[in-house]
Structures are given as C-alpha cells and as structure tokens.
Image 1 (cartoon, rainbow, N blue to C red):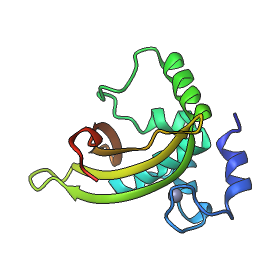
Image 2: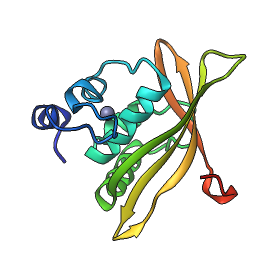
Image 3: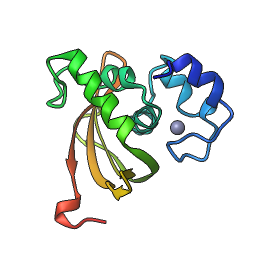
Image 4: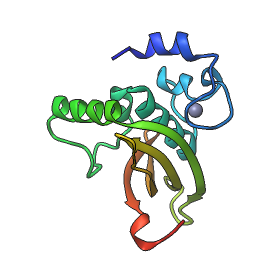
Length: 152
Ligand SMILES: [Zn+2]
C-alpha cells in the first residue's frame, strides 16, 4: 500500500477520483495531507477518494470517535478497510444532496451515489451520510443506505 506522500506526488496532476472535475492536487490531496476539510461535502469527497486510493488511515482518522462504524480493534479495522479497497473498483461518485441540520450547525448530511464494482459485479449504492463537526473538524458519523427504499 503506497503512503499518502507518494500518492500525492504521483497523482497531484491527475483528475481527482472523487469526480469533482478538479486535479487531485487542488481537490482532495490537501485533506489527505492533513488539512481539515472545511465542509461535510469536501470531507465526503475526500473519504471517497481515500477509499479509492487505499488510504485506510484517513478513513479511520475522519470517522467520529463515537461512530457505530468504528471498530474496537483498530488493526483489524484497518485491515478490513484495506481489503475492501483492494477488492473494489471505484468508478465514480455523484453527489445528490447536501443539507445542514436546521437546528444544529454541527450536523450535516450528504446524500450520494457511489459507483463501485467488485469482481465485475455492480456494488454501487446510494447513501445518506451524517457528519458531525467537533473541535474544528468534520467527521463522518453514520450512513443510511437508501437503495432498499427505491430512491434514485
Ligand atoms: Zn477530490
């Protein structure tokens, strides 16, 4: 697994895999390098590209400490993220909606469709993710899969 500095150098001038239409160096690279993503949407995009680039530690670092998706065994969690990244082709990302909680500015939602393939099978899904802002940073908290209720 290449480390983020190597990736940064190599891919800085390529289109970012989060489908923003920007170069990686001007899109998700600064966040992967340690800059706090300024909005839930930029965090969401940078997490998608981190999955696509196999940056497991970024996924861990941007998952809220009380997220139900966080695993107690950190090493096992990183291994399972790495396995998912390696077994998956990340074909694209479509942002469907970005919304903030009207009562709480520290809560935001991003609805997206991720276009994925695993062993040539379509593994795409639509999710409404919940993000929390804490100590000057956005974190991923949880997500609801929307495919089962026929949205999109
Ligand atoms: Zn990006």
